[in-house]
Image (cartoon, rainbow, N blue to C red; front, side, top):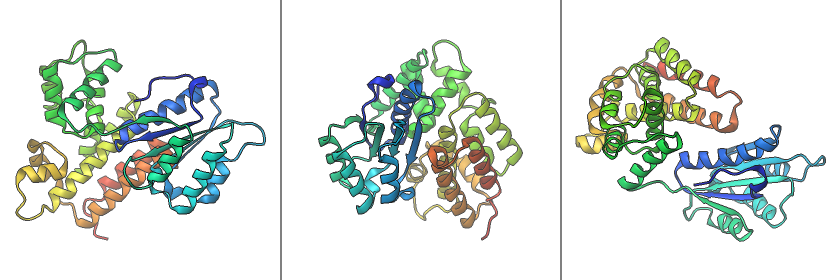
Length: 327
């Protein structure tokens, strides 16, 4: 992960390598915050391949006539087509003094030449690999509490994993909520109390009310979550997880076991029952529409839009009203 840094230590070129979106998002945010600490008006371009072409990349990476500093974030660089990738490769040979370029790359074979070109050009590398082992996810939980100046017992960390599952955004959201809802060292009893129906707002509460079609309650929970500082990306992650779960529960593949179904829905087995209840009334058209909405909202929150709160409110409305959609 990327340690905190000041503006003077921000490298002109960084590659963030890995497939864990939460860690990538945090690394990008740390770099942008360091530059903004020195220059609050810095121009930040946060782009994904579908938003750019060769001309756009030339525009944002060209030296400024007035020496204004810019941060250009290009996410999922492995998905660039040949012409835009060529522009980035050319830029690496002659970078602009007033541009901080941040490339994120999934780390696989796709687009490998661009990643290697960036490393060869002297890019600072930040690795954001997805934790694949239980011990790594447990360490992540302990680090989340340490970041907040708190502690969690080993059995509580395991209980949290058992309750939430393996999605890192959902784990982070659960840690954030536990920090907000508890005092002192968090133990297994505190985790059990939280996951048996605490009333406080969370991204999961927003998502549950939205997929259940309970729009007024979903909006109320959303506004409260935002007001207490919950990150928009975590709320949309919860929405995305709920919609994916509905997609599996509404049309389960024939012959699939409970364990396999839970794995496909990315939920612990005990949550399948509530998923089945929530999926009642959902049509295939409604599920497809809701999946599009969370994907669009993800892009809006990460830079394509200017108001994450508005994007989330629109998403909640669209999801809550999509259940009986037939077209």
